[in-house]
Amino acid sequence: MLTTTVVGSHTRPRWLIEAMEASLRGPGPDSELEELREMAVLLTIKEMEDAGLDVITDGEQRRTNFYEYLAAACTGFGRRSPESSVPRTAAERIDWRQKTMVGRPLIAGRVEWVGEPLTARHCRFLKSHTSRRVKVTVASPTLILRRLWRPSPAYPTEDAFLDDLIALCGAELRALVDAGADFVQLDSPELTTFADDGVPREAAADEMEKSVMLINRVVSTVQGVRLGLHACWGNIRGTHRADGPLSRLYPWLLDLKVDQLVLELASARHEEDVGVFQEYPSDKEIGGGVLDVKTPDVEPVRVVKKRVERLLRSVSPGKLWLNGDCGFAPTWDAEVVPRRSCYEKLRSLVLAAAEIRRSLSVDEASPGS
Image 1 (tube, rainbow, N blue to C red):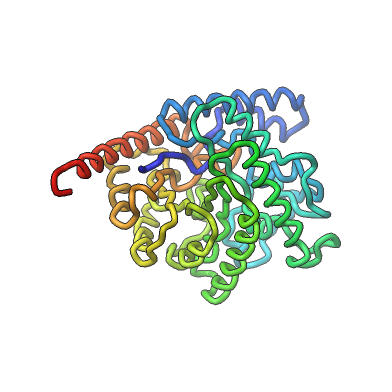
Image 2: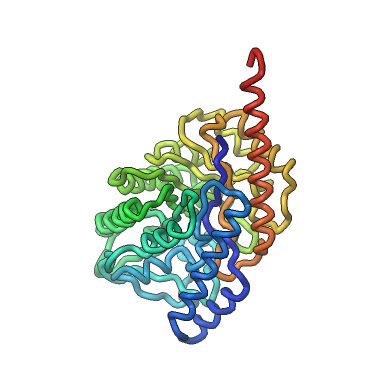
């Protein structure tokens, strides 16, 4: 009951941020930077274990953004300079720009893995340094399509790209199963764009239907691992990329062939979204966001308990996992939530879950329960 975990990223140590920043200004020894990243992963594992989490990640300490690990291990990616990343559609204008020092890669040729996916290698490293269950986060096919594809000679249309995209994402998921991942989470922050009032409802419905079909084509090729999908409103610089009620998306999310939906529910702007669980009953697991990652303030255990108890009115404890609204560090240099706050927030989460588990056990054991 009430399995505790994280969505993905953990704020990086200041020494790693400085090393990553230096590497962007000019090339240095790759081995040095990789050693620092591994040290940060080991530190993050220790902190998550000390906090008492049931399922941990590597904190995404090696990543600068959603896409770097793809571009580093696949053919077909080119680099777009930050200055040229001008929004061209209403949906793109809602989306937040990348940090100016890190350009977003674009698909310029045929895309396929060169060797194994980097996430599989990182999963094995994580597994070799913990006895806890592990979660690995990956870019969803819809995120790759909407953020990285533009018409090119290799893929002049979206349809021309889909088969290779499905093969790419499917191969990554299967490699993670082989690497021993217990939980693979598809990150799809772009989906909440379609809940925004700036996107017409008919257009949003059409895009959500296409998104569900694409994700389901990928996950249908994978067995032997818990699969989840994370949709949120982002936390870059503590703000939302877009906004709107979860109810505009939730019916389509239920059609996804994944085990768990990992959702933002703690932020004051989305506390009312818990109503979707009563409006649309489902047997899916819910990864309930009960920590607000848009503020460094550490929630007391009693506050986290209230958020969990509110979810338990419509989600059974066996189907409810507990996590933050999103990762703590949406960019490589993010420090909106200092690393110390990450630990203290996770500790509040674990203690709240333990107290509620005890109360549920007492209720079940009491006469007439």
